[in-house]
Length: 613
Image 1 (cartoon, rainbow, N blue to C red):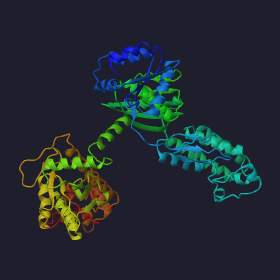
Image 2 (cartoon, rainbow, N blue to C red):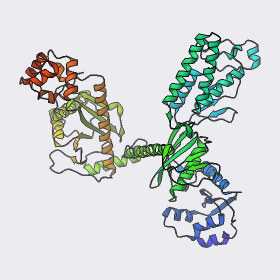
Image 3 (cartoon, rainbow, N blue to C red):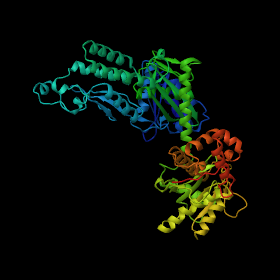
Image 4 (spheres, helix red, strand yellow):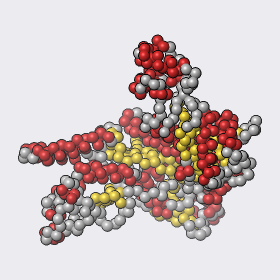
């Protein structure tokens, strides 16, 4: 729609508050907006000169305008949010999240069952939530089951069926997990009390539940039912421990919703903390896509409304990092500068920064979830940049890992079609290398890997990346030559600091453009082999799989070796100690054994360790 075309309808637009809708020539809804004054707001699209290409593109596509007059600006705000959520127009802010969230449902039936569901039906049942984590819901249900006796069976417990004696109590009753309503051993009133305790627990309001159990425990003790009183005492302890594990911010804060936002171009990240009774009961970070260079306050205001609606929040206060317009006048909007509320806001900011960084790491070209054509393009780019004879559909990367100059291991990760093939990942316990020799360790790992593929007649990778400089690359090539596999694959070295790529025999390295897709994928493969190797190394250390070199000395036991390492930090430092220094630590006899071992030419060099399996 042009400015001239708009002039014909401008005078017909109302000056009241409301929402407006823009449609294209195919009658597709492009955009929904709200306005205090519909005529003034809509006219601004056709009378201003926009610097934003996106806004210009929107205006060019508008062929039809619809509007709805509402009584107040608050109603316009609520209606706009509702329509955007329903139709998700192309040019509006969109939540990039297609997940379904779990609920806890209290089923509409006699003696209602309580269970997890992802489907919210219009069946009269009570749905609590939604929750951001299935694991959290299961933990809550397990906690409820341990403390509140609710039935889990699917029996139709109508009064008539119970009166006829149609049912018998099951194992859950005998285990103490159910009070047996199927045999009239529990009234509906008593069962409803349990449901109310459940609601309190889910809201983080444990005090009424604890007080209820304390009252029951006192009554049981007065009636000399000491076994029952002991069971109730344990439940009270369980509830108090659970309360202590919760994130308690401040008892006097009550219920509030906390939001923090981080903007990155056309994407905004919003973290939401739901606090009830001073306890954070839900946390959720979401990603929002903007389209028309919307200001930060508009994005956050929209996100707040959507998230409060999604998670059914009725909190009377919203805590945000900057002023926003929020159309519900009864809701208090707070921008704290200090105190507990500022601490909450800082916690939300910490989460939103972490989430953004996690997304950024994923975009370092880990191609999971991309379609085949995108993967193919990146792999073809690597082939072109590195001048490979074939597209590297199969890439393997090696890295060495050690701890304080001891206990070397190697790791290899495999990527096929640009994504991790975790079934092909391999760890290598060093077998042939004495002490720390990074080059020899790399040669052993590469030799063992490709000797196995050779024997099993498995296909070789098109590209092998050695994480290290020219020394590690040369050692890996030695292993390849000894196996007679020259020319079967391209092998390159990746320098750890500069991210330079070395080819065998070349004096100059290859430096790929910093933001190129080729380097992003290579970087992600390098990061994955680091993660895989370090995880393996930590596991081995925690399991005590590595043997300390000191334990190889006849007469030196594990306790003595650990004592020395704790005091002197490394085998290398221990080797440098004099006899007198060792005697002061472990006595003359053991000091003599240690000095004789290290002074013997056949012994391992200082600081070395041996990995044994």
